Length: 383
Image (tube, rainbow, N blue to C red; front, side, top):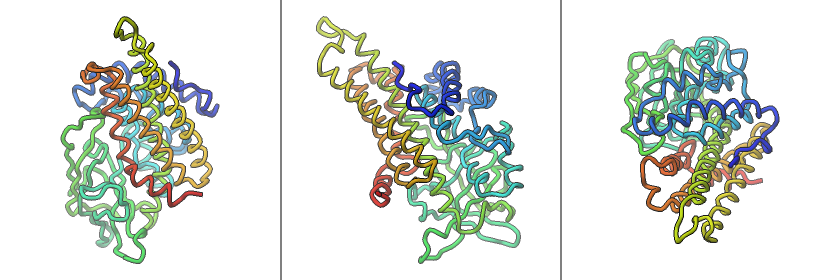
């Protein structure tokens, strides 16, 4: 099956898509099960992705990247997540948070921090979520207080990709406490992970996306220079709002890729598995199930590419980003569950790709803003 065909993809993104597909076939697919079992960080695949020019390449050319746009990143994402979500997430998190610096930061910050990521010398991360606060950006409690020519950070962050592995993080922290301006109380900071007062440990092993590592971070009087603030004080919430509009389009690619993988497995299995003297695809109930899976997949993918265009042109971006993130990730859950049902008892075997896809599909409905929050955004921003 060729569910991720080029017909819906803008021409400018097709070359990158083909690069990503070839890389996924050579490096991701053959190693996916091994890394799921071991739960190890896939350093070798990350290095291969960097050398192939497929990691951190949304960074602009002036700072060492390829300047891939949103459509090109979505095309790449479909292919990576179809091959394996855990490894794909590691590859995409290697430059997570850099956008904040190259969009809002100074040239000096970009030269010192962004360029090494683009040139594959460092990896970054983004620290927003906290142990007691996930989707409420205005409710984050980690603080940054000015002390002379330094900022002093105290608090905790949770579920932070590359919190242990990264060379530096973009950290979202509270710098104000104005009850009348709840969306102007947070700022963004660049925090090297080797500074005093920064401690990170891996979160206990997950049931899914095991090749991607998340961390629990503690800041204990963590001091950084005042010039490590990105943009200006109080602008953190608005920076993240724009960042997440782009990010949610990419997460829709996570869902599309996972859904494609689930359908491929269900289609192949149902055309091979025999029951009552015939392959199970000959039963009408199975045919209807596969038809529903394909219909939902095409609906989700079409919405993803429409939303991509809307966000690129800033046409009610928040509405479209929330809608496509919700639709694509829930489609991945639904079709992977149906794929499990078609596989019967074999579906629960660890070695089966469908079981890995099923577990992985449960994660994107939560990250980048839980889908319940996305529905609030869709309603509030409806045209």
